[in-house]
Every structure is written in C-alpha cells, then in structure tokens.
Length: 328
Length: 310
Image (cartoon, rainbow over all chains, first blue to last red; front, side, top):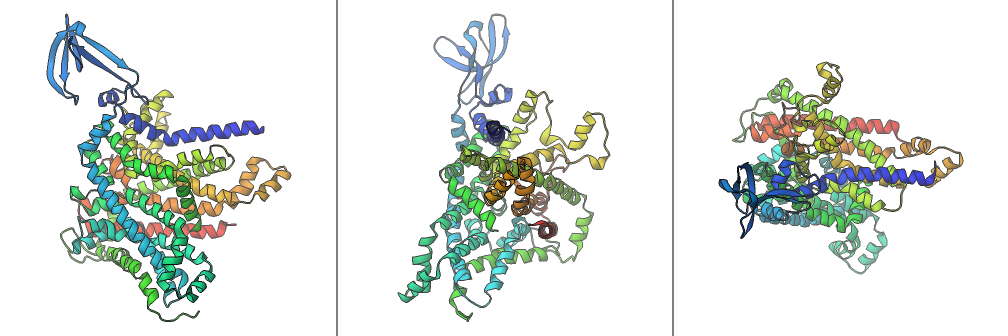
C-alpha cells in the first residue's frame, strides 16, 4: 500500500477515536455554558445558543417567558434575574414583545451558581487537606520501608515482603464493611483521620521505591559509610536526593488516587462538613438532578485541578503509569 | 553480609507495618469473622455459622448481581483490549501529533469517576442526551438507555422479528450503557501500557519480515501479537480486577442498580447490603464471595499465561 495513503488512514482513524474520547468532555463544557431552558428545549448540541422572548417597554428590556398572543396583546410571565417566574400571565402590548435569537451565548454564571449552591469551597479544602496529608504519610512510610527491604538484611525480610505483597492483592471493596466496623469501634467514623490515616501507606509505592533503591550503586553507600554516615543519614543524604523522579511519580499516583477516591469517604463520613469533593459532587448530583447545566458546571470544575496537573506533567504522568505497569 | 538480628530494619518497616496491620490485615480477617455473624450496624449480633453463605446461595438478587457483573467483565475486558491494542499499534506508527493523541486518550483515565459518571448519565438521557442526538443523525430512533431493562440482544433481534429465548437476552441496555462508559474510562490506561509494550519489541524482527516480504497484517499477527502477549496478560488481569470492582458508575448513573436490578453489580450490592439495609454480616459474606471470584480468575489467567507466553 502507498505509504502516504496508509498514513492518511492511520491519522484519520486516530482522529475519529480521539474525538470519541473527548466528546463527553466537550459536551460537558458546552452544556455547562447553556441556560437550563435552552438545554431542555434541546436547541443546541455543542455550541451554546439561545432564543428567548424579550419585553421592551420603552425604558428597559427584560427576558420574559412567552405564553400566548391574545388579540393585540401578548401574555407573558415576568421573570427575575434568576429566571424564576415573579408575575404570571402578564398582558403587554404585542409590539413590545419580540423573539431574540442569539447564535452564541456563553453562560459563565453557571459556574458561579453551581459553586455557591453547595459549599464546594469547603469540599475542595477537605480534598486538598486529605490528599496532602496522605501524600506526606505515604512518602514517609514508603521510603522508610523500602529502604529496609532494598538495602538491609534481616530475619523475616522475605516474610514481611510477601505479606505486604499479598495484602496488595486484596481489593478495597472486600474490606470496606469490616473497616467501617473497625473505625466505628475506635470512634473514628466521621473524622478527618478516617480519611487520612488508613491511606498513609501504599504498598505499591513501597515497591516502586524498593526497586529504585536497589538500583543505586553500592559504592555510594560504602563511601558514605567510610565518611561516618549513619544508616538514616544514607537515606536522607543519599537516597532521597537521588530519588526525585520516583518521589514525583509516587506523588502523582497518590494525589490522583486521593483526589478521585470516592467509596471510602462516602462510607466513612456522614457529616456535611467532612465531605470531600467527590462525595460533595455525588450529593449535588442527587439534590440538583434536574439542573443539568449546573451539574455539568460542577463536574467541570471538579476535574479541572487534576486536568491542570495532568497537562503540566503529562509526559511524566503517562511515563509513570506505563513504567509502573510494566514492572509488575 | 549475613542476616543478623538488628533492631533498626524493623524500625524502618514499622510505620508501614503498623498501618497495614491495623487498616488492611485486621479488616481482612474481620471480614471473615463478621460473615459468620448476624452482624448489623448496632452491634455484633449472634453467631450464625454459615447461614449468611447459605442465604446468599438462595438469594436471587445476589445471583443477578453476579450475572450482571459477569456480563460487564466479559464485554468490557475484550473490548478494552481490542481497542487499546488498536490505538497503540496505530500510535506506534506515527511521529507527528503522537503526544497529543496520547494525552487525549489518557484524559478519561485521570479524571474522577464521579464527575464522568454524572456527565455520562446526562449523555444517556432519553430526551436530552447526546447519545440519542447522535443516533438521530444516523437515523436510529431514540433509545431508553439507562431506563431500559430489556436485554440488548433481545432488542436487536426482536427489531428484526426474531424472538430469542430468555437466557439469550443478554445484559440490559442500561447495563450496556454502563459498559460503554466503563470501556471509555479505562481505555487510555491500557493504550499507554500497550504502547510501552510495543516499544519494547525490537525493530529487527520487522526489518527481517520486511525483507521476507511479509505484509503489515501478517507482521501484526506473527510478530506484534505474540511478542506483546505479556502486556496483554497484564492488561487482561488488571482490567478484569478493576471491572469486577465497578461501583461509582452504578451509584451515580442508576437508581439503586435499576431498572429491575439489571445494573446491580456485585460491589454495589455489597454497599447496599452493608449500608442501606444494614446487613453487614451478609454483606461481608458477599464480599468474600467476590474475593474468591477475583482470586480464582487471577490464578486461572496466570496459569493460562504460562501456557501461552513466549
């Protein structure tokens, strides 16, 4: 086959699939920018446009809801700024009402409305707080344990190693119920520590660090030992400075993991003040189920921080996932 | 260096060990224990032996949730492998815009399941959703999607005037909607893994095949597919395990696993039994059944890998 034709087909197929992959995001954003009436009337698919009736009484123009024409007058509902009906069946002269069609109108205020409708600021704060503290915890516990597994000899090392490994094989839903019972017994339900402490350890991250620590040359450690460096000093002064890419990888996994985690915080907390972003969003989904445009706006701003992180570090993130996958 | 008793190695693994012991090992063991009790949210209840398990085997909803989960896994896993391998093979042949395509494919994977579930729920809306709008463009009548309990094979064949026996009806269209969304969500990750696997295959093989005059298609089946098979097994096992755990989609996109329980997946059922009807002992028994299933399938796949691998 002709090389140029082959490439055209490949790019064509990749573009079609690529569009399929991002269409939900594009539609999410365009719906978030529509008015609810526009969405319900099913006027626009991707490009927010709007049509509404406007009453121009000589002094000011305002959006109204058109009911019907009756002789020389039009019957309308008057609306407030929020779009709620304030006066029903209001007759006005017919020539003062006209249909306005906008081909392109973006309602950015949906984002503000959604953000203020439920305390999303608090949810963001909770998520950041939980993600950040778990990240610190994961890095500390993983590096310490990985150091021992990678560069120390001790009785039971393999036993502990395989114990950790086998615990990684057990998926979260298996111990969800019993964790709830356990946290209940120690009075941790509905607390921040329930969201943080159990996730301050990540077995996979331990393996990631262990792999890396094992690959460091022995000479470094011999030289440091001669200079009188302590065991902990070696970790602090030699291994950590040499592990920046792994720390970045582990941090990315941990942050994306805790930002997106849902089932655990849903089950372990009940108080609205403790809702993390994903739980808050899921309650918003129940409360505002008919307000499609606001739901889309909330979905959009809830994924934006992760998308920003992703776009800035996409090479690193994709490479991390690929590498971690192949190591298994 | 000979192994000897020193205190310090244990101190280093202590923080990780304490956390894993308290928040993994103990809960895993507790799962077993709780499953033998008539455990509710109020307290321990009484020891009832294997009653929870016996009830489980008689529970129609349990079996339905197992069937639903199997449908999901059986469709999601091959579909995901097929598409991600295709994407990766195509991506591997281009230079310009490769990064852009990779980013686009990977995006659904990093975004939260909660947010995209909300988006897909709205996409599948019967009146206003994008799916029916798109179908309308190609002349297909609007589908009920998430509120359709009829099986997809039943819908398809009855449209052609063929009536299928009940066991051939397949997953409900509602579950099929969940399946589409689940494939979409995980595709990017598998593509990246495949891409990395493909880059590990030495160019020498292809050059030799080129000299022998083998077609691109033949090269794919004789070189690429066998040499990428370790990646395929990794993707197979990971996708299976992850698909078995699908939860957020059901929680957010469906009305408690409806219509008619056709989207009730096993993890959702565990959640419902544990936290809605508060039968925690029973929920633990179901959780252990799930664990046995996942473990069994993983072992089976590992066995298979030994036979097939190059």
